[in-house]
Length: 255
Image 1 (cartoon, helix red, strand yellow):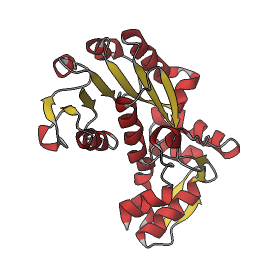
Image 2 (cartoon, rainbow, N blue to C red):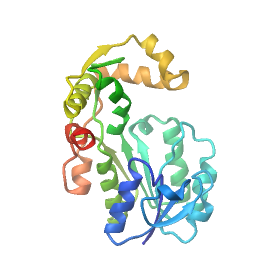
Image 3 (cartoon, rainbow, N blue to C red):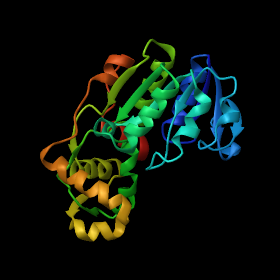
């Protein structure tokens, strides 16, 4: 099997490349900067126009990095009738642009697998500079998230390429839902700092996050105070190992 990995220099893509190479797959990577390619045959380009990179491959690890489905038809057209493993979001269940991207993938192939991720643990890296000072000021510290180790997403993708997972939707989560304040404490421990959470008024946070992101993020985090993100067993079911806990991720990053 020849697999094209898009987003190959990203948090999950570089692990997918290494895992596929270890499994003996023929790997091609689509990157903007060839110097950053983690391995495989390199094609320079952009996901918005992947026709050259798609030529001759059998399967695609598909990452769509935009908060809009504009242009998705052109992006997936070169992957017609190929196996597509798409890194989606748990939010796709409610439609929105994530759902539109899933629909576009379904329109070009019957051999698709959707990895609906709650959120990557790497999303918390933005707290690190504050955590080093001992205090993180942000909104909704009681919001509970089941964040995923990027290696688990990669392991799910590799299993999808090497096994029978066509037309399957998997919910990819961490092994437990932790409050954002608990996540900060874990990051602080890994950094060797007693980091604590300081609750920030949402109105103040909105001015720092940017209008477009704040409009979607703040209501979502607010909802997680009373309704935490779900915890799924799909990682264990597909990969054969339990999802990696958040404190393992933090120790790997900072210890």
